[in-house]
Image 1 (cartoon, rainbow, N blue to C red):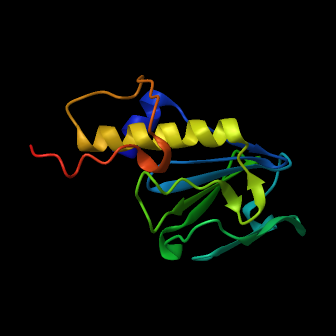
Image 2 (image 1 turned 90 degrees about the vertical axis):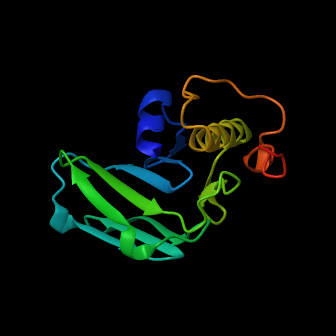
Length: 157
């Protein structure tokens, strides 16, 4: 479901010195630009439940405690075209209200506008899951979207 929604609605990236990161309700995606011609043997990547570490050609790109917890055995990294490392982390909390404000605790924080757009996007993704017959990919949202948007679970169907 996320992949289809993301393909139609785009992503809200948080730019960093080394590339960018973005998120869906289920996953966090990290894209790291590396020198052209980098080989997989030159990449050292540790993907833990609460920590992450990336070294390229012996130099640390980032290292630290993740903003949220992830399922470490479902995390992957790939080297694409010898110039881009793509890391995919699976969130343990997959609710719309679980919008990461930074990649690492205190580092690579989304500014207020990007954070607002990320939360809107996760709320629309939640609406899409709850209402599969509708297309929310081009929708705009305003009002109470913080924390995953309004809770309609108490309403009778």
